[in-house]
Length: 66
Image (cartoon, rainbow, N blue to C red):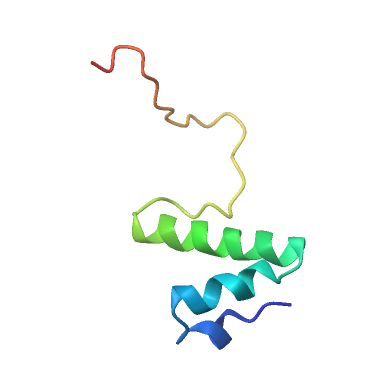
C-alpha cells in the first residue's frame, strides 16, 4: 500500500521513478487521490461520490462554441 505522506518532500524527478514501481492497483489509487485533490482545488464537487440517478450534469460540447 502506498503512503503518500512518505513522499511529501520528494521532487517530481524523485517521485516519478517510485510511482512507476507501484502495483497497478496503487497507481490507480494515486490517480484517484490526485484527481480528487485537483477537483477540490478547482471548486468541483467531490468526485468520489457516485452520480445520482435523475440528476442533471453539464457536459461541454463544441457545438455552437464559436
